[in-house]
Image 1 (tube, helix red, strand yellow):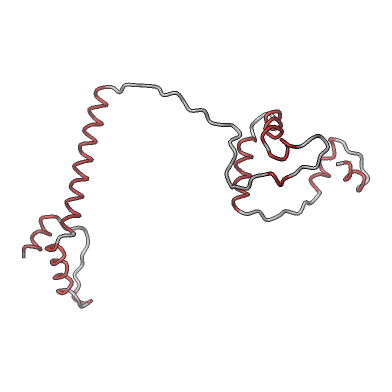
Image 2: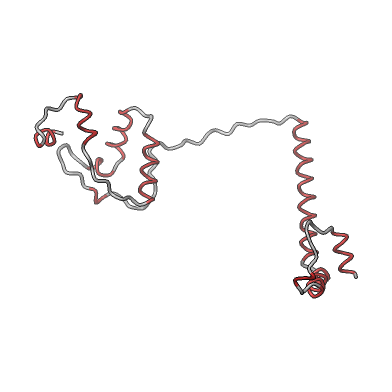
Length: 169
């Protein structure tokens, strides 16, 4: 700020906010990974106290850890592995045991049983659709209706019994 003040002949005060807003700084195009990392870091620190930000900056960032007051910062030691550092490690939550109400357990078990039945029915349908008789019935239908003007209006679905009837002839 001292250089700006001498270059533009003004005394620096807190009331110079309008000057700061008028200075144009050229923006550099950043790749998506860099923008994403910056947004994540800003998200972590935006609601924290300034002292927390300073503590992390001076104790966990590569250039600052090795620097002495007045030194130029050396960024050559910064690892470029595209992994986000864990500034605030998440501690594992202790496991809490709880019991469900017996009625809730019955409903859950009934739901699981119904889901298994539906899965089994779906497996049976898929097995049937892969069977030779089903494939033969489909090829017969295809041969029957090859001309575009003879195609019937087909919408909805076919029941398993109807498909069996087609297969058995």
